[in-house]
Image (cartoon, rainbow, N blue to C red; front, top):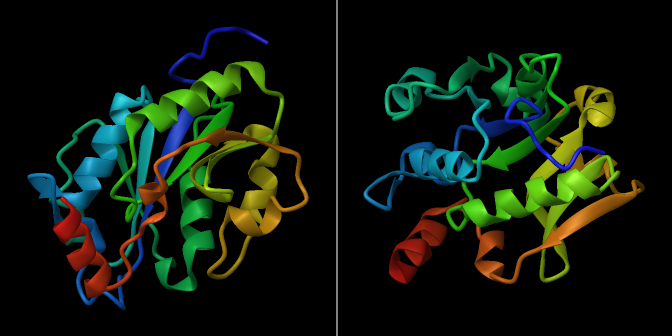
Length: 200
């Protein structure tokens, strides 16, 4: 396997179509680090060295689209976002360049995402033959997760509000260890957001 990873080999899909029902406001647009949360996530992806970025939006499409601060990302609309996360996975994969060898999936409510995780996964991609390379924190699998092209068909077969975790349980996967367990924090409620603001 080549020791080099071209920018065209790995694409990023940011899953950001949800309606944030429990939170009561779009988590994509929460104030965070002198901007909105979705732009922070995009900054980390870019700093991690991925240039081919697809952003899957659904609920409040126009509001969120208008706040995205990067002109060079491809913004996709998932008309079926209410079906759940599998519809956003399909939407993203259906727009992937045929030459893309792997996709790294991200979620929008991971405020402690760090570009160094992305770099570590890309390094692992050079040497690992695993179809799936996942981040592992304190024994738990979490995003970002990279899937090689050979796994795309299984992802496209997902239905409902389920993601890739449901189909990698029986797969041989490689992992990148991350020691900061704050990466496991997501924002589903006002209490989560208040906790995050208190920490920063």
